[in-house]
Length: 451
Image (cartoon, rainbow, N blue to C red):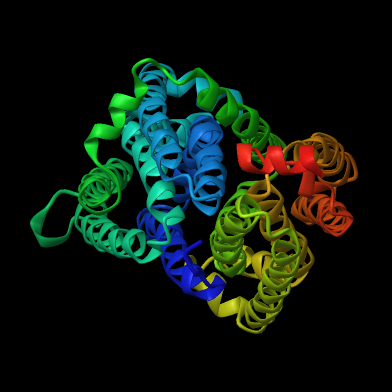
């Protein structure tokens, strides 16, 4: 197995994740200079994108597990076959979802609860970004392949280029710089779409130049049903867990749109964009740790996977504490980046104090669930999510925020309760060692039979 270290993998993923988050952050930031409600509308539209594009993670997320396990087991050709399936299926599903967004963007937003000006802005954004979402689907598949070969710096560089293009186009098209008309939401959508098209093109070029050959698609004839079945066995439960999370957030957003004030809606939008940077290390470390766990499990090195998994988790937790503390200290200036509305700033500053509990739970889930997925243990996190997200997060949000009238404070308490509860369950699962029996690769199946 090629020698890889956590932070050698994690820091480029961290930069790539930061840049990816910055892509959405810049849209909201630029839009906040255009119109506060337009900024919230873009955030609402992006939640609709997140919920539907979970389809992409069914295959790309599963391919991350299988590619890393096959590479760890020394089965390079099998890894290439999985890569071919992932690219093909993601592209086809991306085309279908793009068509859905083009035709049904308003009914989708209506289900969330968008209406009036929010509907107008969000529909405009979603019809453009959603209509070209198949480029994101393609990037999702290709970036996973490149990363699991240990080449995390490449996706980082491409993300940097995407962000530079997006930021420049955002400023020009949204605010009307250099004599351009002020295009508002449409400008933000065009900027995001163009940057994704460019990113997909460069990433594809690198994939077939340095990692795989275009001839891998010959492996699809006849279609490898067994490999596709393995992908679905891992991908569907993993994607369902992500789907449930995004769907729960969508329901909570609907509550905000229907029951809470515009001030609370705007505050939620800005605090969410700030808090993205609190868990960014957890995302990077979790993805890097998943790659390593897959390689270790593929090679049969379970004790090493166990120790390295916990080490990754504690590193991520330390970063989360430091970043959340900084967020509390600088909470007023951070809110002031987006708005000069004193009510929004005061409310957001208070939420950022309570947010530390949510982030500690979220960090635990991001890293430990990634470790479990890398080992092939995908059903347990999903089962926990079904209960926790919908009973604690969604039902709890309604009871605390709406029924008890606690507003956005109740909302945050319920979401934090869900993250902390699931985090405790995930740590106990990792400690139990039951994930050691979940490897998919044939080498490990044979090993367990012999044991």
